[in-house]
Length: 308
Image 1 (spheres, rainbow, N blue to C red):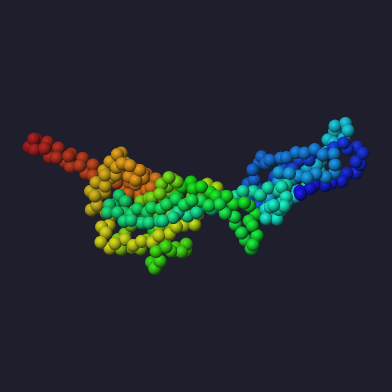
Image 2 (image 1 turned 90 degrees about the vertical axis):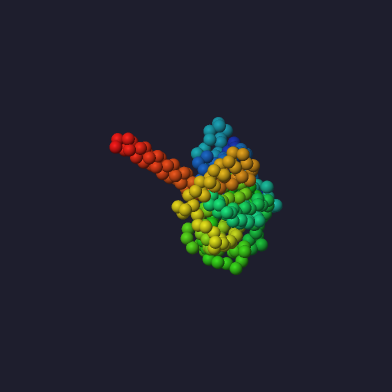
């Protein structure tokens, strides 16, 4: 039990005692960032002891005890701070201390696969499957965790890819060494694939897919390696402007009339921030500008012939 006891100089003048206990700060919190409005519980007793209730594990509380005389006047009160024990010390032995729930990190996505595409609009597609989030209790040294662990449902996925050192394993360890800063995109929880661009022919790449959740943070990555063929035509060069424009038109048609798979492929959320979509628009504007310049040149030549 979480029992508070105290003494007074003259008990004859005291009719009752009023207790207030307020949550101050809990384990893992920075004290200067604590919530200003903390829950305060109150109780009244005629004895010089009281069993506190509604306490959370691994937290610091501020207890204030006021004396009230027979005239109803309340004393100034005495304050005392105390700390509740961790969950593993009290769980199952007392109902006074409540084990705080804490969301565990989400599970990484499963069945990650990469398929190369014959278009500059989307050079490769990485796909994955949503993993069922399981509840578990964390143990350390044979003792249960200070907090009960609850599952964290995903709020989205984060994808990172880039050139990396060659590995003999298909699924690599979590320690991936990228040759440069990898590209990254985030997608919503309903999306299970994303486009990978900025790929070079005959190059080894690593892609990492993380599950994101609001309370649990980020999962460990699901890792997949792949190597682009040497014969792949490099994208984003001037010679591929026409191919990029044609791919853009196809993607727009699919976005208007297609199903879920096509809609995900053309969704802006599955492209990186500096993706081929912006390059398509740039190429389109460039092509139109060239056509206008050629048209103006023809008009000027025609008027020059008339004057002559």
